[in-house]
Image (cartoon, rainbow, N blue to C red):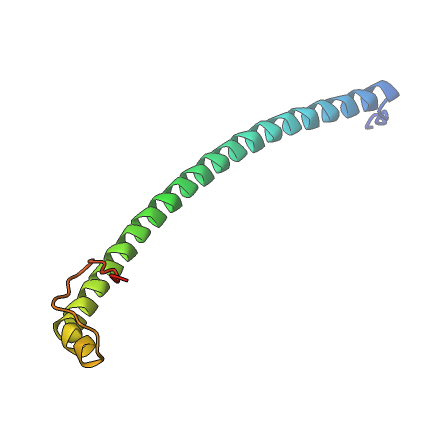
Length: 107
């Protein structure tokens, strides 16, 4: 005949709760550590991304500036050849014109 099973004692149940609590605390500590490491890695990656974006913005601004200069050169080459003639037809007296030259009125 099988012997009757004895129930758990209060001390055994309490020990199980304490063990479960200790395991949960350990998991919480480990989770916090992993979370801090993950946040640190995220912050490092964001800083690197910000640095790359700034570098790309500088390169883009340089490229746009060069493009603007090239566009200005194109306009100057298209307009300059007849600029003196057109101003003379309007009654202004110019003998020459050049790129990036500032002419001031004598008055």
